[in-house]
Length: 115
Length: 111
Image 1 (tube, rainbow over the protein chains, first blue to last red):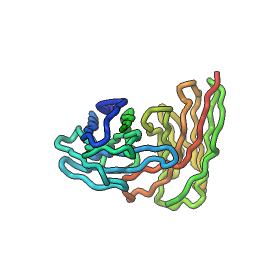
Image 2: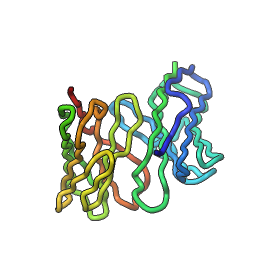
Image 3: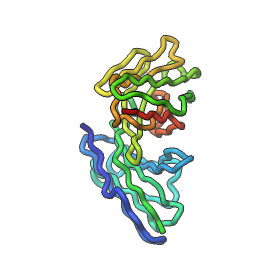
Image 4: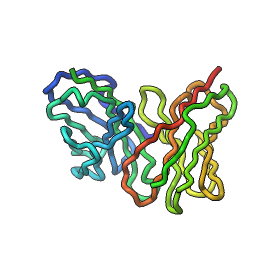
C-alpha cells in the first residue's frame, strides 16, 4: 500500500513563527503536492513538485515556500505564520507517467492552528 | 471541465450495498470519472476511476452509463468505517494535476 506520512497531526504555532511541515512517501512517486482544506473553500493547491528540486506554484502560494531535496520528501514552509494560515494541510503524491493523473494518495493531514 | 452533481447525503444499513449516484451530463470524451472519499478528520482517499467501462477493485465498483452522463459507485457491503464524504469528479487526461472537490455526498452507515 502507498503510504504518505506527515510529520505532525496537530500543531499550534504563534504568529510570526517559521513553520515546517514535512511529508514523506514510500512509493517512489514523482509528483508530490501540498493542499490546504478549509470549510466552505474546499481543497486548494498550494504547491506541487514533479521532480527533485522542481516545483510549481498552485493556486495559493503566497506566504508559503517548499523544498524537495529528495524524491520521497516534500516540505512546506510557512515563512512567517499568520492567523489566516490556520487550516488543515494535506500532502499527496502520485505517479507522473501514464494515467490517471488524478490518482493521488494523501497523508493524514496536519491541523495547524496559528494564534 | 465537466461539473458533477451528487445528492448531499444518504444513509445506508451496515452490511448492505451502498449505491452512490453522480451526474456528469456535460462530460466530454477524454474525461475520466474519479471517486474519492474523506473520513472525518482524515486525508482524502482515492477509491476508483473509469473512462467507459465498468471497473472494480478491492474497495468498490464503478458503473458508468453507456452515454457516460452518469455513474454509480457501489460499496458492496458497507461497514461503519465507510461513513465518509464521497466525492465524484471528472478530469481530462491531459489536464493539470490539481484536484478539487465539490460538496460530495455525506454517507452515513448505520448499524
